[in-house]
Length: 330
Image 1 (cartoon, helix red, strand yellow):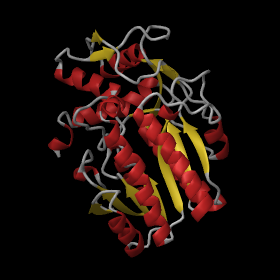
Image 2 (cartoon, one colour; image 1 turned 180 degrees about the vertical axis):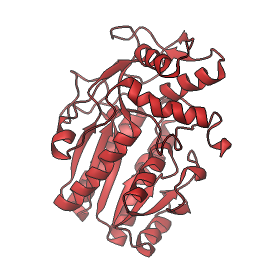
Image 3 (cartoon, one colour; image 1 turned 45 degrees about the horizontal axis):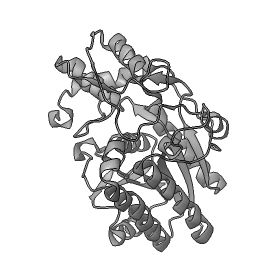
């Protein structure tokens, strides 16, 4: 089976490419390299540099490479940036999805695995969050993901493009034994910032906000390890092709960890007493997001192998030790 991974040079997409290759899939990657890294792409995958909004290019790749299914990881995903630059997010995320679906329809490719987000839920009415929880995003990033889910729903109704949207929560860890990791510029995610500070010893790690409605005042999130996340994507792909039925699944561990608890877990993993400062809240951050992943565990038979914060952080620590300057070291 031939899979097109769009955004396959990014953090999560590159781990997906590596695992698909290992499992015997023929993989083609499309990435504009705006935020991804060419060095992150498995050498056994065929690579094209280009934009998801280039409908002609995407259609050409789908046809020429005889693609059977698409995995979409190409959305912009930084919540604070989406608040400051909403039009950038609607352009790339929403218009990009429309262009992809038009290209898929043109090339008669009918299977899509879409990387959605827990940001679709906004501030949940109750925890843990199920797939039936109301979608009420509080930032442009989450709003674009809701729009993208609506678009793929109607594309199914009109054109028979079957899709599964995976709404996942915070992702951490590294793939391929610590060789494929998180390298963003700027880096806004909690775990890599903690680990970078552990390595540099600069004491500049900041937690944003200690006045949230949580047990210690800092945000609570459900962290899923990146290899477990990719397992869910591949299980979703197999399920979609077998059942030919669109669906949506939460992917998370159902364990909520506050920012301070993640910091403490990182101290245990690294053996370093990482100092921190407390900063103001960031725009668009909900208090708590914790998944009910019962549906994914039951229907997809997904079983995460990393259920604790320490397990999730361990592979990320491998990556940062091996690559303190990210992909510049390769």
